[in-house]
Length: 349
Image (cartoon, rainbow, N blue to C red; front, side, top):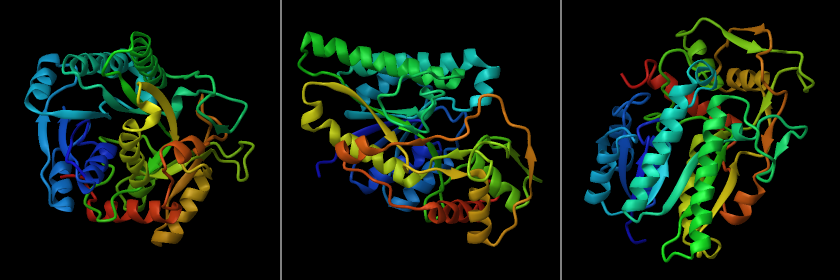
């Protein structure tokens, strides 16, 4: 494979660092821009340790147009993988302006810098939260969008912007049109099998798996299970969980797809990245206890406003068009997450 340079925004974060690892192992050269607001530079040192290959790191904010312009002038970037963004649903309801400024405005600055550098291949980290509520539990990409919180709305706004960019190039028939893959994540969990990189949230985790792991290792006292009276098989909420390594392999497949016939004349396509099956909160806890032999102390708490009973992905489009599929099961996700937690009880300290 010809070595090509991929700019990874937010590359020091949880998903970004795993993407850097897979990119390097696929013989891409990786350039990272990250402001380290919710990540650690140590993760990139661990990526280099895993792969034996260097990462070119720039500590900068994607809202800094001059910094991005300098990076694009210095590095011969062919494709951008865009992870940089705030991502906590609850926090987005408390600080909506931060989310719109960081996620939406930051993306505007990024695509302006890309346009100026004539770099128009983009893999965007979107989210299943763009769908909102639905009478269906299995989501396909053609479902109407209806996000119910500022985080989800920021992702949906960005998708609209990127679709408009692509459409404008298609209408104008420009020589180098935008080629964009919108990857809608469901619930990434797990860690690299080495235990060197994993999820290291600031403060109390917002996501289920790191919370479970931190309770099991004694860092947190108890897990709250929000609702046990949903119309599901055990009364707790059901979600689609996907191993983070499977998820980022979908990004590598997306880069390859951007070179293919479907994107020849430019396009903006959305893809669900999920396992296509749901697991309940209690099933996650039970699997964790079985795989690790550790007891998870939990209590049942009232439902949270806006939480759905059940949702999971229909990943058929990604399977057919990206030639991608999940390879790891729930036991793998739990085992790798616990391996990371055991080896790094305080994260990247």
